[in-house]
Image (cartoon, rainbow over all chains, first blue to last red):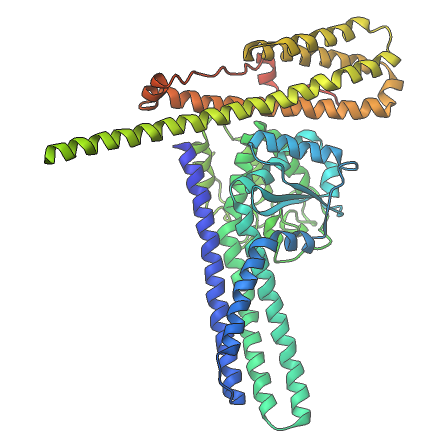
Length: 343
Length: 186
């Protein structure tokens, strides 16, 4: 039963990923189709050419999504391949956790940043990568580093990485498109008005309208998607990571250390925040004015509060089966509320 | 005629069930063998590292002959082991002797500063950890396989096709209490 639960979860993750891609493709096709239609109407040309071109574009970008999203996510966060000579211990710990989970060793990346954080990306366990900040590497002892890497290995094993990376790229594209439409709208508006009649003005207005819609929709989509996928997965990866090392204390201590730092990551982006083991923004972890008070958690937070995660880890019964742990993680589906949760 | 077809249907169904049952067991058995191979790779790695370590320590700590001999003896015992049980016992012993070797090294500041020694220490530490995790994975897989051969209907195919149980890799009690293999922290 326990294993079926795990496989069921992996299957569900794959379907969800597929659903996200499909939804995004449909939205893009509708928007793109409307834009082409508008242009053709405006300039009075008709033909299938633009539609075919756009169709090819959609197929192409989906392929790029699947094969290059991990590379994009790594590049966006400034991750470099970790040299085994300089980061021997990190490579060793990743190998250890790969053995513990019975998975192939993922590629190891390093991010030059004093803020302690880590994330995993890739499209399947065979093509996966774990990135760790230099801050985390220097701060953690071996057991703690093992805990963090085990957490990331769980994301890989559960196929969280593909979904989370694709969501990150989608959010990134939506934000990019919004900026593009917004600026072009202004630009076109100015340029056209100077040269000739009212045509350019219309175009600019429509451009601006699309930008406005995206400006409202983009952050909303970000929040919704995050709320749907991120927090529960963090609990789950904590639990199965602890199961992997059979040492919840390692990850627990690591999380406490992360929670106690004031560092903010230098390159943070809304798009990739949910990939990380803990929120890259300092204010989501600790209140600089009142460090001893728990951070207020809102419904759209990308991560559950660290104190709750540590509490969960400490109450974890490793003698229990996988099934028990998954039940434990699932019971917490909407743990955004800071209500007390029974162990 | 109808009876004949029903009969043929039942036979076909039985064959399909048998094939499926057999294949399930084969997959699990191969997974177990592969898991054992993973431990084996790490054990060999450790055997390869030890002579190097012994040589390095000898250069600085000549008086610790007994500790060094214990390590070498335990290594030989492990290399000669034929069964999982023997290998487990010898390697637990090797872990113990290494622990005392690293404890002894504490008393030699020159040794502790030696780059070669430090590199070896990290290598042995990670090999130690890898053995522990490979063993943990092996035991999980063995449990899975053994359960499959004992459960109904797996037990039928297991007895027909002679799928034998695998031996667990026993973990010493004190290690279970504190799962920290060789403490080589300076």
